[in-house]
Image (tube, rainbow, N blue to C red; front, side):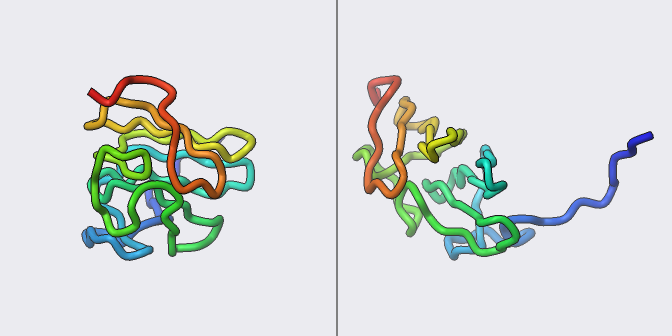
Length: 119
């Protein structure tokens, strides 16, 4: 019989300490795993997507502004709320306040709108 473990562990972010450093998050809104079990986090109030390599507590900003700035240009988000990563490591991000879904290819500096018009 399988039983749920009642004690969780923090795998990304610092409990009760929001911020913009590589190990801090601010109002996470969505997560995804890739085929290597790397964790992708929609860091909503920091307007970015953070990638945490398997076993690491330090993330790296792979989409959006690493300093938490929001905007409407395709290299910014305004409260990303969801993230999905496909087998080619393309990111699909729902950009809440910009009313769009944006695709980021690996190592790109900006995304491409695939749904919505930003209004």
